[in-house]
Length: 156
Image (cartoon, rainbow, N blue to C red; front, side, top):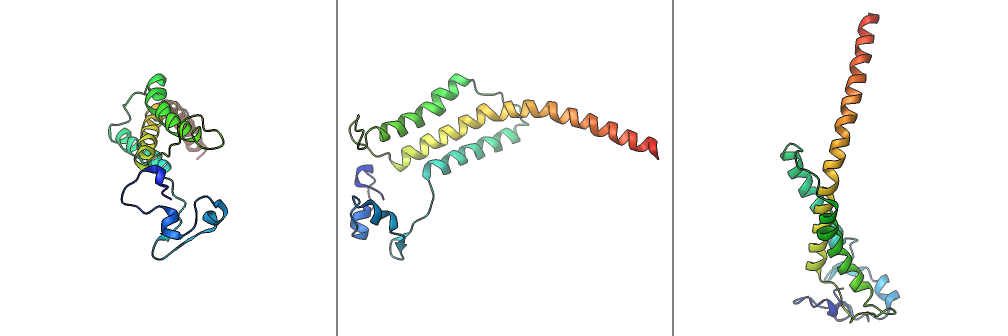
């Protein structure tokens, strides 16, 4: 990787760099790397961007005193789910044996962008909801702890 179909300029395609045909999947899968090219790393651009979006929103949410309201579900679907779904499924449905769309390979930029949007909007949708429910839990256990301490004091 990268495949020529990804249209990433300045990088040598896998086949040209290694001498292994991309069509021979078992050989390509078995190739671990070499010092001049580098070694395989199980790192997904989209996943890193998802976690980056979650981290960024988590920091903003924490620094604002947890006062940000939850993103409405329809905006989460529109800006978080839809872009990543279109990118992923259009690529999937363009690959053999399906081939419903013209062949395409998602670019690293597109993977990172859709992953970041998904992570950010998912955190924006979920963090405020979780925080709201945790307020009740903290209150409940705070009262329970206070009662337990009061009982302990009366026993002394």
